[in-house]
Length: 212
Image 1 (cartoon, rainbow, N blue to C red):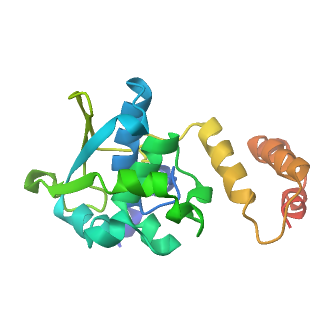
Image 2 (cartoon, rainbow, N blue to C red):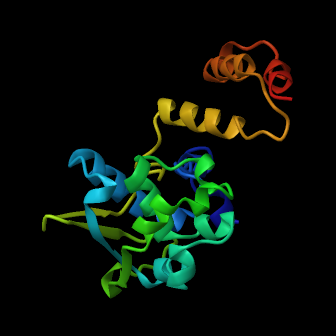
């Protein structure tokens, strides 16, 4: 009973929830974050990439790096979502990762697969932790001999590095565009407006109606 009532009314675990910034296995998120930051900061183009070495913990290796041949050339959407080589390649090629990257057509895009073939996961024992999302170090080597490296322990979306409102709105638009029943763009924008000002909405059924 003490475990249930301790800090009752003071500590709220809902504050420790995170939002997935990218539509892939969360184990790939630290690698995606590191890659996006480097290609943006150093303006690294896909054609400049010679090799990408990714240092991972054992849990990350098992979840999103094995078997390597399948992860470098995924056959179906779920293979791509659970692939660190594919998601990192996507980050290099287009500097973002979104739902549209996991369609049948997208996962067979040769330009992306060529980069995925250059991704080499390597287990670094000290990165293995007793938690689902382990730290990841991404090292990009370019054709001219330059080496860029970035370690990420907590990717965007983690409770320690929460998404901004703009991030959430962009994610909402991306998800809404894949609704089983097409939603008019004006309804999506109106629902965003209402949700961001929910305390002023007299009847929340209006939000449901806009999205149904």
